[in-house]
Image (cartoon, rainbow, N blue to C red):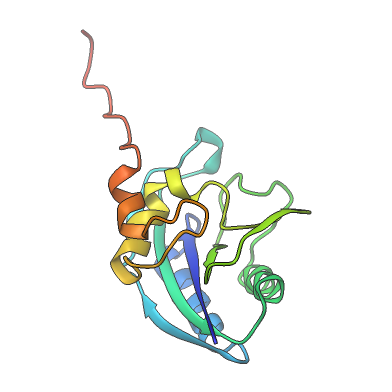
Length: 164
């Protein structure tokens, strides 16, 4: 069995219900168990065209599915929960599931499939929930733990407080 770290996010409709449905769907995957799920946290969108605030979480899975098959199942769960990937990574979405880490597997240049997830190290909205449930999980590229990556991640800039 492999350990996989999955990031979850929703910023459309009943965000908490979407996260709960996604976790239930992950737990129902053949050969897969949800070992832990992080407490959901509300975060601001990265870009203005991402829509409203997100509810983010993470799940630690034990799975017999190989990485690419697990990713395909994540995309199927997204489709079942109303996610449209017309513009990947942009706009409001009922659910967003990203495969962040899969044991110490590294996959490069695989037609939209890369492990570890290429941008997770700078995304506090991924690292904070991940560090709650898998602080000692290792990023095989940097050889740092998730907890270390969180400590090194840039903080979001402070919101402007008015005129200078």
